[in-house]
Length: 463
Ligand SMILES: *Cc1c(COP(=O)(O)O)cnc(C)c1O
Image (cartoon, rainbow, N blue to C red):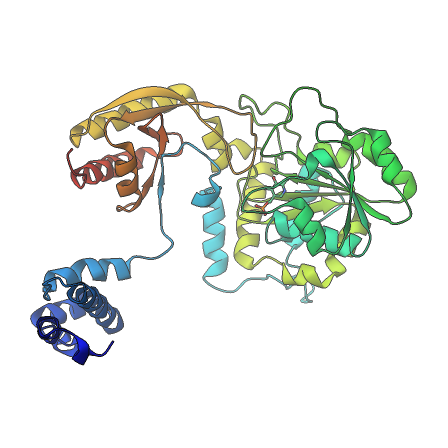
């Protein structure tokens, strides 16, 4: 809209706004330039002026004040991806970055990331090496598989397996396992993407060995078993085990692929996790390939790990997609360090597992400490026992008991302000009340968390 068409009052107000240049050379502008780089200060001024212009055009009487510059500069200086305090109690929260990394993994990332590394160099021979070399030995030892390959995530691993082994041919899957993993990742869609033909067998609740047997034909490229990682099937159910499927597939030369998801390497002593199979159990039961995530129960960086028979893994490695989906050095570093912890018998010290295993008395004590911090900050809360979740699409039936602070008042309003505060805090709302579960918090976070809650409630009207 041209200014000439506007009422005189609005035109006058718009003309009353300073130029970007004049703010830059003002006292406030020069003070900002002492702290922030020039492009950021310029952008902050632009943003403040844009808001004022919009308000004036809406008929308001707005004028420039240098006070608005501070918040605009803070917003621009804050990284988009940043630390969040997880008071949801969900250990593997996909929206919050899943597994927190072990100090050992972070140290490895730093050591490898800050300089150069032997990522693709065999130091003994001086020849070109494989970036997976440091991961092979631990993955073989921990799963009993002959060979391994690592890609970007488990979804990528599934895509690679289906494309490399079944493109244009048939893949047999149980109707009870045509799952959506989360974030819209649906097994039938991946099949389509890899140009494999899906052959569904059995029913939603029951799939027998005979169902698979009838579906097998010379056109069968692969039999796939998808682990039900994020839901449970109870009642009148029947499924065919990996072992039975292996007995069916092996004599026919058809590879058996298990999309196992969770990446459990050793049993986890959490209520409701008893039946969760380890990756080794799938390999030992005769799966030719097993795919799982690096950042679920393994507790490492985001990655998709495929272990299995050397012949089939080499087929994956030879496919161009494996190059396109390969992981970077930071992932290799963090994953190797995490796998080493597991190999050294320290798997329960890997943060994701340690958090899932946290003892109730420890959690109770932490909740008491949080309540005290909240009281010191002027916020009344009650300590309550709650049911937790491991999350991240794993152990759907596990409800590890936890402890939390229950904060009275406007739960939705407080939660929204906590989310946009500094540091951002994510809690959960249960029966209209704000629940701050302490499972995924560190003792040193409690003071900051309490201060964030107090600030969120100060900004709340009517508290
Ligand atoms: C989580 C999961 C995936 C997807 O794993 P990402 O690493 O998130 O890509 C695939 N399959 C199963 C069975 C899963 O549980």
